[in-house]
Length: 421
Image: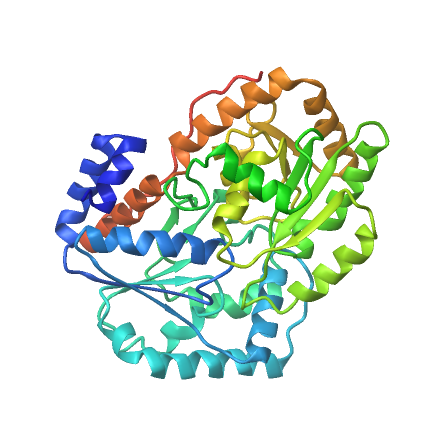
């Protein structure tokens, strides 16, 4: 039976897989530990779920743990998330104490693994304080991985977190515009999707139609779709506003699909706001999907005419990458990591308002030839830049740099030029 890595050679070629094996050779047997806040829901969990098995196949002793907290802890870290993305969301002293004590308790629970690991990757603010409890015990190097748009953080919150993050051996950011000043090497590594995952593999047309039929969607009427958590930064209300502007002129169906994450206490509240705003319009389909509904999301994206991700803030936006990979033009918010993926007039359009989104959707619906060309561009762009094999290569390169003494910056090399269609 073909091993996991060799399966990727059918997508990216043998040379890419050989390169991964060469990079991993000096790292075989090394203990690498990843820690984040949840194993289901959200892009971080999705990426780790695919990266860990690949590292293990390369001979690396890779593990994945999560930080565990009570309701107040997640209230605090949600405020961190909102504040780092620019909101003036004050965090009380009581919640800050909960944050510290929760990290202390998790350190005791995970002490042996944290102390013995050769490399520890800490993802986002939730477990960032863990390092402060083992600075004198640790064996290996610690890396803080930021998946959030921190380009304009609310300074009091960043100042609080900075005291923990500054002691890391390195940090990783998705874009250069997110980077904050820190006294250690800074690396740029954008996220990725797995082309072999259930969410991204090719699907038979019969299966796509089955899912669309089950949701009451009509294929003869254009379908525009946004897949995301129900989060105000994803602007689902703005998406409905854009849909209403389009529907004045052409028949169209809107799908807002998503689920929750265990570390997001605001999800249900936002979902109710979206349902209330949508009202009883039969052409607005709000789908609450479980975290393991990967083939359903795949079918929905493949069966849609246009993919939206009208975020107001976005660290990266894996749903953008997924839509592009399916050969669909994406209309995305002109923010954060979406700018790295949606190249205006090439793989989609960047917009700032519901009116702008509506205008671009109407344009694409009138020009199916442009939709097809943009779709071709979109898939190739993901192939070149945002697959998990590239992501893994850059992680391995970073580890080698830290262990063998190089502080070189690792950046995603983008195509020199792209031409608009």
